[in-house]
Image (cartoon, rainbow, N blue to C red; front, side, top):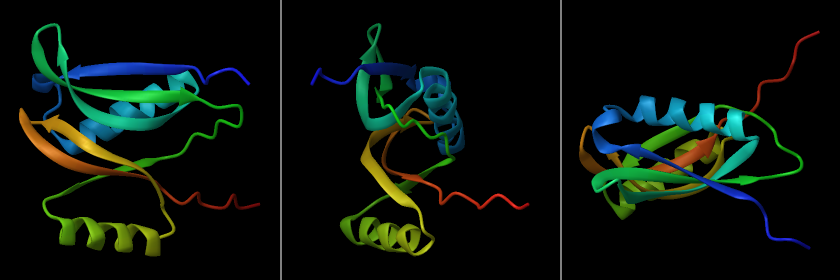
Length: 118
């Protein structure tokens, strides 16, 4: 079986001034790449601070809303995991990102899909 195709998209720290912008950027990139987010990490973008997100192409690609949540401690992380699990969201990954030029620890979830009404 061949290795999965991955894409890395980088964002300069100055370009992301809120967690919502990072979230919407990831949703756009998933849609454009037909790939699901796998990793969020700090990076150097042309010699400047930035955030890199790794996406992996999947055969059963399903677009869905993402939720990016900041956390500050292990207790906060566990609390956020429990809250989002209770809401039916799927945990995807965690990492660090630049938001408003500051390093933020983030958890990434896929929102529970809403059923189509007929």
